[in-house]
Length: 339
Image 1 (tube, rainbow, N blue to C red):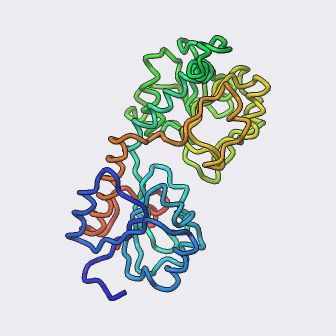
Image 2 (cartoon, helix red, strand yellow; image 1 turned 90 degrees about the horizontal axis):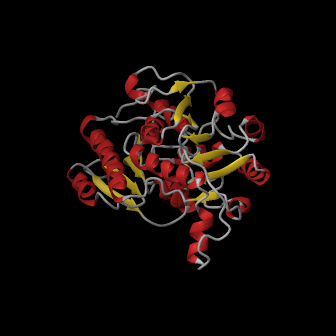
Image 3 (cartoon, rainbow, N blue to C red; image 1 turned 45 degrees about the vertical axis):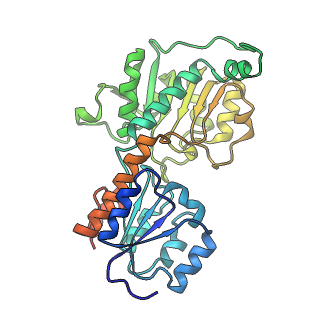
């Protein structure tokens, strides 16, 4: 392609709720877009120079269908002109950020924008799991009234263990307070600033949280440390009848071990929005009536998607006007990468 007089920004996927804001970037950059194709085609285009000159990529979570994961193979083929990737999502495990940093590419995500919606989803799943709501809800639609519903549990007085007291974890804790939970949490390190722990939740070690919580809600990023952090050994430490909620990433939990714990009654019920091999779901979870399932829609609201898209666009605008991202991820923040 002929050289562009403006910086080039490549959009992978579609902007759905902030189209006017996206189009406004055309005053500062040449906007290009990929809406269909597959990984092989994208890699071929990178290798043949189709995307040479692109300064920044704006990518949606669902654009992984167009490119696959941004792993070393893909990153090595990205044009040398590329310096920034603005990712639409708080979790950025679809991108090998360390390899990007080594290539001089800075990556941003959307912290904060997803907190309320994801926390709301977690509360919905928590209450649904406590009441094993899937059984009567399904029976009702089948004309069987309550069906074979058993009794559920109330939240009052139970110990809620939060794994990960980041933005989503703290928003979730705030929403849990009116239900009269005793709230505790575990992070790599205790939260120091009161604003990051607005409920004054008690900090405990990882094993203590597993052994003493009636409900465990997962709000961790997925990385090498947290992958399969919850498996057979961890389920064995938990209280009998524990409830598990996961709105973070499916690969944090060994799904087969969770199915076994549910079948054995170790886990009373689970509320899940994420899965180990999305969009595949372990058959043992699908057939288990004590599991509330959602198809990774924790941020699927008009308002939240717009907030996320605006932040992605603001990151791109910052690149074009100031030469840096607003919300760089920690791996590339350390590198202090700039245009």
